[in-house]
Image 1 (cartoon, rainbow, N blue to C red):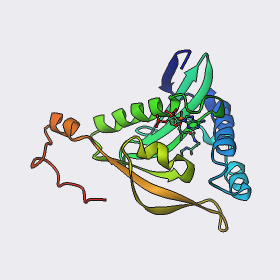
Image 2: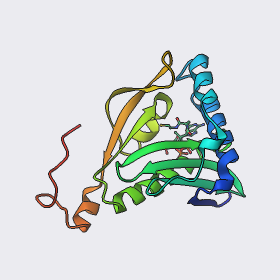
Image 3: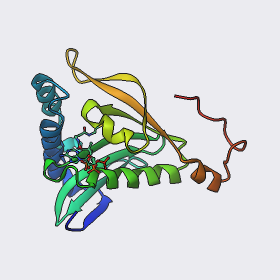
Image 4: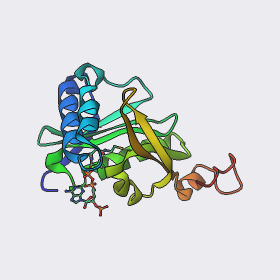
Amino acid sequence: MASRLNLRAASAGDQHALWRLHTRSITSLCQGAYSSHELRTWVELLRPEAYLPADPPRTVLVAEQEDQLVGFGQLDPVRGELEALYVSPDTVGLGVGSALLSALETLAWRANVRAMTLDASLNAEPFYRARGYVPLHAARRILTSEVHLVCTRMQKRQPLVLRSAAGEGPGQGRAPLPEP
Ligand SMILES: CC(C)(COP(=O)(O)OP(=O)(O)OC[C@H]1O[C@@H](n2cnc3c(N)ncnc32)[C@H](O)[C@@H]1OP(=O)(O)O)[C@@H](O)C(=O)NCCC(=O)NCCS
C-alpha cells in the first residue's frame, strides 16, 4: 500500500462517511454473491444515524489513508463476535481488511476471548479462511421477513501461544472449546 494506513477508534464525526463506505462496499463487493434485490434491501436498511460511536466494550475501528476513510470493523469483545468488516471498493485487496481484522483480533485476545466468531458474507469467506477462520455451519442474516442473506458462521480460536502466555495453556484454566 503506497500511503500510510492509520487505524483509530471511530468518532461521532465519522457517521456519514461510515454509512457511505458501508453502502458502497456492499453494493460493489458483495455483488455476485447476492442478488440485486438482496443487495438493495441490505443497503436500504442502513441509516447514517446508526453509526454512533459504539457503547463500550463494543469497539469500532476505522482505517484512514490520506484523511479518507477506507474501511471499518466492529467487535464485541465480550462475545468475541466480529460484527462488521467493510473496506472501500477503491482500496480492496490492498491489506486494509487484514490490518483491521488483525487489530480487532488483538483486542479480543487481550480481552481473553477464547474464540472469535462471525457470520461471513459468501464473498468474504475465502478472506477469512486465509486468516485462520474455519466454517462452522451455514447461517442466515435476516433482513426482512422475505430477505434472508445466506452466510457462513465461522470461528477462529485464540492462538495457543497467547493462551499459554496468559497462564491458560493446555490442561490449565477453562475447559477446551468443542471441535468445530
Ligand atoms: C472481505 C474484505 C473486508 C477484505 O478486505 P481487503 O482489504 O480487500 O482485504 P486484504 O486486502 O487484506 O486481503 C484480501 C485478499 O484478497 C486478495 N485480493 C486481491 N485483489 C482483490 C480484489 N480486487 N478483491 C478482493 N480481494 C483481492 C488480496 O491479495 C488478499 O489475498 P491474500 O489472502 O492472498 O492476502 C473486503 O473485500 C470487503 O469489504 N468486502 C465486502 C464486505 C464484506 O463482505 N465484508 C465481510 C462481512 S462478513
